Length: 328
Ligand code: MTE
Image (cartoon, rainbow, N blue to C red; front, side, top):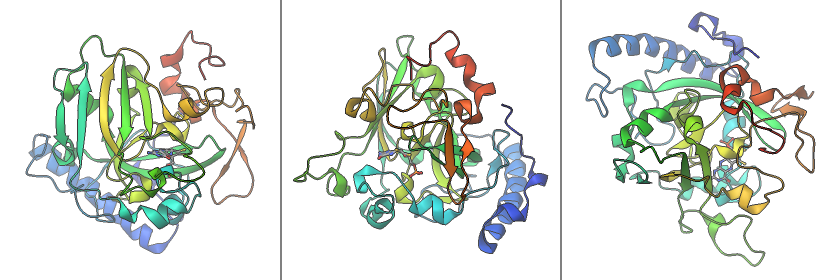
């Protein structure tokens, strides 16, 4: 399926849920023009002094200007409220409303990411030194959860491959393992309970290096033109739009370059239900429910689920020759 390229001229006010968000979008468009001007005048250096979009601003702070991405879908956006109050972030509880209610205890700054393993520049990096502010883009992607609901989210982020390049993976690096913060003081869902724990902490995920460096894979630091709310994975989370939502790990504190596929949280918890790849695939059912259809949040009727969540033209070649019923 072709991804429709969204031109700025196609942004219609009717796609925006309320007036405030409509005006936010108007500011994005003005900001994009500024970004283009700034980009032509200033080399896009890491931590450039000409930065305008300040990703270290507190939650809700404006991130602008934002470049538009040709990878964005032109589908109707889900409302900011849906995206920020219907969440999966088990470190804050297992109900969809728990992260919005409890994630206030997460401290998103200062924040470091430990980079290790098969790479030339291992180390502990301050997040704000890793973000290339002038290069922040808006990427409107579908998010398809394994639970068969979906949303359309205007992320703010940058390609993961930009930071991967900076760390210099060696020829042995075939995978990247990611980890979320482990801190029960900030994340109440990690505290021992009488009923045991849903997952083994920290939350872990992994990608093959070619998946990680695919241009669709981004690290997100915001949504709807604002700094990422804690419940959505502040201060930095992965977004891999052709995979089920659980691959998009939140609040990342570690990245490790390795030779073998890393253990991943949901695969460790229920290997027969959640594989390493977890590509959105309507032809491979979850053992307990069908993946053929999905309910877009805010809509009544279900819609068909698309192979690779609709990003097949871009990513199917990554899996050529693989049996996706076995590599689920
Ligand atoms: N990351 C961490 N650390 N913990 C989690 O529980 N849940 C995953 C993923 N990333 C999760 C996580 C799941 S199951 C989904 S569907 C998406 O986050 C949801 O992202 P959203 O809440 O921003 O929509």
